[in-house]
Image (cartoon, rainbow, N blue to C red; front, side, top):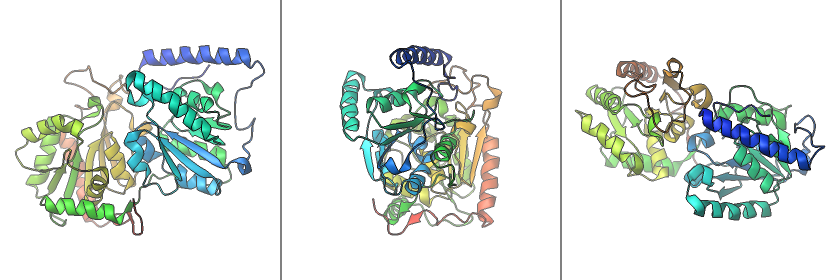
Length: 414
């Protein structure tokens, strides 16, 4: 029986359900395959010369895809002649187009990821038929989600590699050993170590932006009155929202930080998606000063250009936070419901603030918090964040941050 990861399935009841599914399906599999052994690389060595088509499953969030980016150039080193296909949810498709080592992008909105009711389950059957018709030699599942693992089996990939952390490992031809830490980048490292143990790889998530993306971001900021950055007038992007409200810091805290920054002469840009407008409007209503608001007013690529133009990014556990980190922006990330050790940024200039160790309920499902006024996010104090920001600005002013111009791909295009 598999040991179900609390990081992957925080809710105890859901872990019990996953355990039950694993027991039933594993028994069913053993019934019809009585001589099957537990999969492992040591039992069935991968023949690299037989791998011509590779499918990477990354159906979850933007941040998960960002943290997985080291696998794509690495696969080109291991299988230089193979065609790499990346399957993502629709919200990650634009990001996927910026990854140079991906040959093909397939948009697959799975019902257990994006919802959608009966219509989504009907589309799932179409997606299975489409993926099965590709006859992939190797399918790699990077989340350790038993539903995605079963999908590998249903599309009949010849070799199926993944992690036994939520069950149904019987569906894999290769179970990759993994330690207790299930950070996405560490899982990529374990996968690569097992695919090519003799090689070493750079596991730092990176995102290189085409010059037109950078230009679009700078142009938008100029139009909205944001001037050239100087040592005493920095451009600071605050993205307070997240897909799940439980991840968000308080509106009062965000408003207080933005006011202090403006009162100290800096330029503050508030960003957010249309779905986050209600929360950001509340923040703006609490402020004494007037920041530049780009909430719901940028396309994805222009938004990346805005991030690249900033001197500092402040946000929570969200896709935009991971985007800022990956393009080399100094990033302050506020964490609570999810453990930073499991999903935190891995940039060279990142600072994480978290009080999750003070709360026995963390990690949790993150959808909504039932703790009332005292929660893992509200425990993060305004003065604590302000002190971290001041230290960061001193660090930037010292000239030690040399990565500002490193996110340009001069000949790149979308």
